[in-house]
Length: 450
Image 1: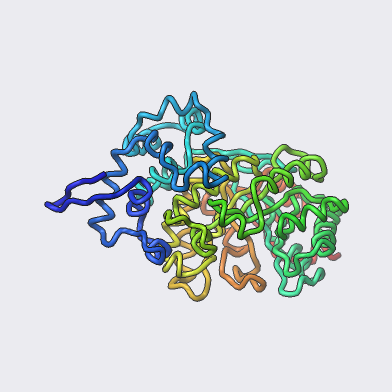
Image 2: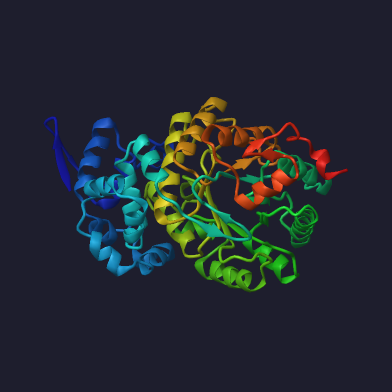
C-alpha cells in the first residue's frame, strides 16, 4: 500500500501500519514506536486509509482472529446483512455517509461494523466532525431508570474516600445528591477490594436510596470477581463493573477473560437488585493495552475501539472512557486529551453504547482545568450521556482531577438539559431543583440529616 505526495512516495506494509500512522499524534503511539514520523507521513497514511474499503478492514483486524478472543467476539457478532450493505464503502466515503445520515440510517448498518472500521473512520474526522456525528446518535439503556434520552444529561456520583470510611462516603453521597448528581449511578471506587467491604457499601447505598426514594443505581467498582462473591452473599447490586481492554493479553492483565465476563453476566442477570435489561458497567481508556504489554503493535485508538466492541457483547447500562487518567506517556497534554475524549465518545456512540466520559487529567500531565472544561463543553455539544461528579473535581482516593458537582449543574444550565426524568422529579420534590435548575436549597446535605 502506497501513495505519492509532493514528490515523495510513502509505503505502508499492512493495514495495521496504515491505521497506526493515520492516527492523530499521541504520545502512547510514539512510545510504542508505531506513529507517523511527521505530519506528511500522517497525511499520506490518511490518504491510503481513505481509499481502503470497510471489507479491507474487516479482513485485517489488528490482532488475528485465531490469536485473540476479543477479535473473535467482535467478528463473530457481525450482522452479515448489514455488513454486506456497506462492505464496499471506502473509509473516506463512510465518513461522508455518517456525516450526512440521520440516527435511524446509521443504526441500520451499525451491526455490520467491526472496531477497525469504526477506528478507521474516526481517524479521518476532524474534532468538529466527531462532535457533529456523535450528537445525532441516541443510545438508550435501562437499569432501574433509563439513560441516554436526548434532552437529558446525567452524572455518576463518585463519593470516593481515601480510607473507605462509610460516614465519609455517605457525607459525599448526601452532598452530591443535594446538587442533583447521581442519576446515572452512585458508584464508588473502593480502597479495599474485599467482599465484605463491597457488601457493606452496596447495602449502605441501597438503604439511602430506599429511605429517600432516590431513583438511581448503585455500584462498587471492585474487581468483577469480588463483586461476584458479594452478589453470591446477597448484596443488593444494581450494576456490575469491570475495567476492560481491547486485547486478550491486556484483559488477562486485568484478571479477566470472555469466559469470566460471560459467567459474571449470567450471575448478575439472575441475582441483581435492578429491574431493567441493562446491568453492566465498563470503563476504558486509551493506552491501557500498551501499559500492560498487550498492544500487539497496534495503535491506542484502534485498541480503544475494540474495547467498545467487547463491551457491546453485554448490553451495558454504562460505559465511559477515563480519558486522561493514565498519564502523559499515553496522552501528553491537553490537546491530546481533548482529541482522545472526542474520539472515544464518538466510537462508543457508533458502536451503540450509552457512552459517557470521565473528563479528567492527572497532575503530572501538561494539562490544566481549562483543558478539562474545554473538553467538557465540546462533549456537551456532542450529546455525551454522562460525566463524573466529584467533590471539588478532586478525587482524594484516585488522585486525579475531573468534573465537579458544580460543573454538572453549569453544563445542564448551558445546554438546557436535565437529569433522568424520575430523578429530576424527586429532586424537585426535595426542593433541590425546579424547572431543571438548581434552587437555593441545592448544596445543603442537611436535607438528608434532619
